[in-house]
Length: 253
Image 1 (cartoon, one colour):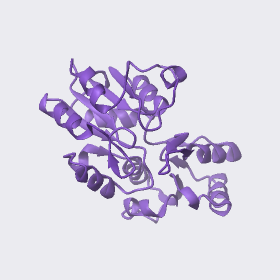
Image 2 (cartoon, one colour; image 1 turned 90 degrees about the horizontal axis):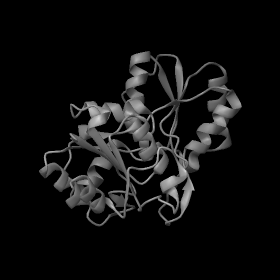
Image 3 (tube, one colour; image 1 turned 135 degrees about the vertical axis):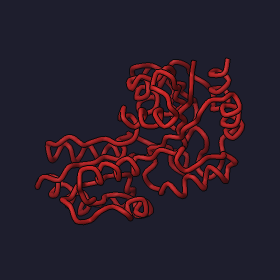
């Protein structure tokens, strides 16, 4: 028996500035069936506040603590380990790190900086890692569906570049890090074997959740989905659905 459902945001509930068909009703139906819902995103260009506001504008009712972001997980790590962040992120995400301590040894925090991924910024981060700073990757996704409808490079390529140059391995926050899924499940009073995941990323969302112990993972053919994703990464999805509404239908059977 499922206790809860984890849902990705972009490409599943919305695309750009519009909600995807059936998104609001799908979340409402899950809650009406007594299932807890948590929202998991690897988005690192927008602060948590604006993501909550966007979902509410689409008619999705949620509390801020139901949304799990890599930035929040990284802030927890920085506080627990006494590190100050050297941020290689999009400026819009800066507010999520506004309360972090700036007095400890530095850790490089890398998110999807977009056009701010300059050589100078990457080389500065490399030199700090070379000098001993840990590398914290907010996400390592390969691609995302951009505003023009085409795929664009995501942060993973830049994480790989710094790992390659420094010989160090990044600490990963966000999906597919098992602890990210587990923290969301625990917040519902559930273990991973009692939750399902719905996502459009066959690698980070689906294979990641199943590797973390999820009971089920449903891949939707929206967002960044590409033909053949069903078998591109292992473990394969438990089910494939045309969209969030069909995914919820399958889970509620």
